[in-house]
Image (cartoon, rainbow, N blue to C red):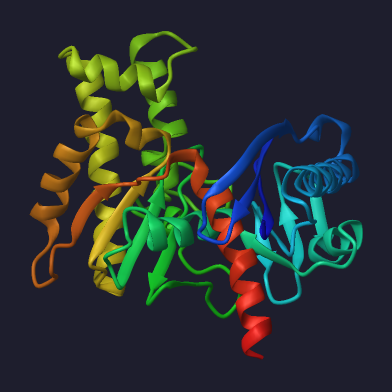
Length: 310
């Protein structure tokens, strides 16, 4: 059975799969990145994990994978196949595509940015499959974005398109890791909501999920924290939809797991802010934490299709 290797590398863990030509995941596995051992160890863990999958594919499906796709965080040069920088993994200028291809015996390898790769999957087989234009925004430790146009994801001139988390929505506000103040992700990410709720309730271990539960139980302090985050998020999303005019806004990540506790006030807040803009559908992501692997598999199959057409 023809299959590809799909790898989704996160800050602390890796998800991997063997993916069939129809996009289905034939086998799935997880490993820690081992980032505490340094960037070189992380790279070796990725290469070793991929080699394990190659061997398993041979054993189960009668042949080696025909290609591989890998999604990594940070700054990614997809054209050269270089993982340029990732703060949480400590690496710089890693020739990931070349290293993986060499370890896998010369098979073609596609390298993608983790959020854009997840957005590719959501656009083709998830919540955006009926939308020609969409914006995918996962709300996790930070906030990023993927711009979907006609079945592909727009990377931008320098590989940083879609960074909606660094739109300044509260000028002069909290300092962001990027160096600005008042960025969207300092106010409306899952990490920001968790931090604000921890301060409000006095429990330093409190999380965004705890805040959502407190909102649902009617806690006034939680409602204030939650509404502040929703308002900031709505401001950022309206800026995004004003620029991009998407048919669909897809919201994913940990904060989206709150369901209607998030989506009901968010739809109302965005609706209040639009004037001439057409209000897009605002929907939850459909693929959960499988999006990265599914997208990496799609990148690999796309690479093969491109080579055949060339």
